Length: 498
Image (cartoon, rainbow, N blue to C red; front, side, top):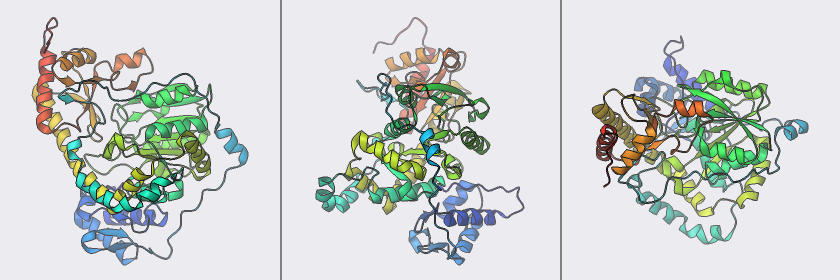
């Protein structure tokens, strides 16, 4: 498990003291809950680029003061009964009725048919770079066999009843612990709403806050599935340009009901939003009585250093609606996501969830709750992180081998990177067509379900290709890039027919 901490060698405070204070603070404010497992000292040291001894000193001091427990080969955990002055996470103060009533509108506004955003179907190609696809070969059926054995005796009762609309308690608690350790979010089980993936989360947000004509600020380019949901409720989309560091806060509109962002790994460019920009987004939301929809896309995968804390981790004003999913770590077919919401919105959001489909299915929730609580999810994540990092490196090496110096973005995290085609190669759309004839599925931004607000944005990204590398091994990546090179060098009037 990666723990999002920030250490600065330039500060007068020793590094081990900085680590101690941040972990202690997260235990006291409830972000790290009792019995939550912490990363091994070696792993945390590698993430923070410090010596293992530095982390060990911090852990030993936290243990001596009663915050942590060393449980031998099981690892390091937050104490079951941490230091006596530990603070419970208090309910956020209720907002005045007039404020909450003017902030969201639970009436449904639907404006035509929203487009579906799914991977392309049809005859599969040998080498497919679809963004977000996992490699089924990496999934251990042994883990799920054990989980099935643990839950099989509860199935008759669990399946005979409707699950609670907000999700089963065990999974809500497991998710609260997970986001506390992995994303720095101080959440209780009561703050967690279980949903059927990001699309349902976005529909719940839209149902609560939008009606015809309300403005939604959205990244440009952005995830098309989000743009379609908001537009289908009659919202007016206000595009905000993205640069190499994510959304530009200077371009935010003066007024909007919602702001949709993917700060961990911006879709599609892959940019990571810096801390300073995150703070400016929070300030904008508070100043404009707006809400931030944080889609924590691809946050499970970082290929160098520790991840930045989520926007929600520092949401003192309770303006961030956090949306996460297990689709990128366990597969889209699982259809389980989650929201972490301000307390004052939970009842309304749960009501909308119940209106949509009563509740998510009991058995997948029970299996996932066991998977998280057992620690096997962490083992799974560590394994596929290493595999994805290796495949990312193999893809970059293959591109450089066959095309020389290449311009890419987003390779520092996530499951895909963006390749900007040089002037000597055809435009992305043409190269995708040629590659498909050679058994390689490539995707320009149009094909990758990217929202492009206008012709200017479309032209700016006409030479961009999104390369999802998680489902192809190193050997397959080399073969695929070799075929892409053949397609790129193909004379204009030549076409491969077989």
